[in-house]
Amino acid sequence: MCGIVGFVGAEDAAPILLDSLERLEYRGYDSAGIAVVDRESGLQVEKCKGYVSELRGRLTQRAPMTGCAGIGHTRWATHGEPNDINSHPHVSQNGRVAIVHNGIIENYIHIKEFLLSRGVTFASDTDTEVVAQLLEYFFNDCDDIMDAVYQVLDRLEGAYALGILCADTPDRIIAARKDAPLLIGYGEGCSFIASDVTAVIAHTRTVSYMEDGEVAVLTRGRVEVFDEYRRPVEKTSHYVDWDVSAAEKGGYAHFMLKEIHEQPQAVRSTISPYLRDGKIRFDGLSVSTDYINGLRDIHIIACGSSYHVGMIGKYNLERLVRVPVSVSLASEFQYSDPLVGRDSLIIAISQSGETLDTITAVKTVRSRGAHVLSIVNVVGSSLARISDDVLYTRAGPEIAVATTKAYSTQLVMLNMLGLYFAEQRGSVAPDEYAAIVTALEALPAQMQQVLDDTDEYQYLASQYFNRERVFYIGRNLDYALGLEGSLKLKEISYIHSESYAAGELKHGTISLIEDGTLVIALATYAPLFEKALANVREVQARGADVLALTTADRAGALLENVHNLMTVPDTHLILQPNLGVIPLQLLAYYIALQRGCDIDKPRNLAKSVTVE
Image (cartoon, rainbow, N blue to C red):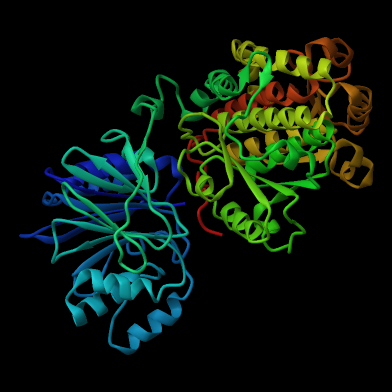
């Protein structure tokens, strides 16, 4: 969840660290800090509660931080409240080492008690400080920083990505990783570590990804990586094929708005490699036709918006492939003793590929022989590396915490996968297959059509921004779509919203409807349109203020029954949510804008959840 950056090169580290931390702000944080080392001044640290801009202000009020090696951090509080003292980096008692850390040290209390018994004093309430203090404890004994690092790692339990500075070795930084993402960047005469490629893209596009148990030593012109037994490791480098401008706002007020408008191109880029001559082709998949035909079941595991993609995927895959499909929250799935085997396909969905709950769940099912196919946006990410197959969504960097284009590309990828499996199994009629392919080809242009006029969403937001409770209702695909619409609204506007299966209204939830309650009724799923219309009348009779979403062909039938109406073009049934989600995203965005919310960095949220 937090952000790490490290730099060693020929120029002062502090300005580079600050710029890199600003590129990590989208991950969410409540404090920031940097540490720099040189031979004359030793370790120099500045950190504070608040944003990187406040850290910059602190630095202007002190002597310049000199040194060509440094580490930086943006923190979300987990152990200890957000304040200056609990912010990273943490420095050992005698000032020999400084640490930045992502993850959770599960046995930190035991380590802290040991160190307290040895006379070590602690400044913070964090689990991270024990790493700095334990490292200095061993370093004082052996006087070899790498020996001390390995002694510390042998005693840590939990997840960590570590950046380490040592006053005795001011020409290098040390990094270590276990169950938390960390990459190495290779620049011209400089080296980097970072939680996310966004932090280093302005300086290099060549990166490699650290594996669990690895330790890296970075100097100005060299990077050495070792495994848990201190054996050298040859790393494979990856080239990042998007430009730094992709991680900038490009004239939009917020990253979220930019990414909403990038959806047609992102979906086009996701579809085009796999759609050739009227056919969906996944030539790189290792699964055979025999395996696909022998599938007993499919399990989709994901978190957040990716879970909502899976909810839509369940309906569409069962319709197309004719195999039972379950969709589970990864945080629940991994502890449920899942019934999976060699004839089970696991589809794991994650934008970052670093979602710890999803990664842990995948490790669980792989140990039971299930085949894992991941849908991921980040090439070389942890989830991609542990999966049997991976499909990349090609959404480009997504900076806003509230996902938009990653959701849309995951959705279209899952639909293409279902269509591919259906053809292999012979469970889809040729005419329907052709109709879906035709609809896929037209989808980006239809998405652009929805985005060409946003005035109505700004007007609707002006009517509804002051509501404190909102309910979404829908059936089948519309119910699953409503889950995402509700999440978008609550996470960026802080309005309490919930999504309900419309058929469940009379089983309890209709008791929440009173005069003036805003109900967003979704009616894009054609086979159940009449039932959706009946549900609209049902809530309206209880005094609800109804804002509906439907397709252009059915707008007339719905208009006389609602207060306001949003429409999207008609497309094939299974692709309708790709169009329906855009008005819900825009509505949430403009409502949050009217309420004065920090749209790209909503409170308490992080872009990449790398702890349980």
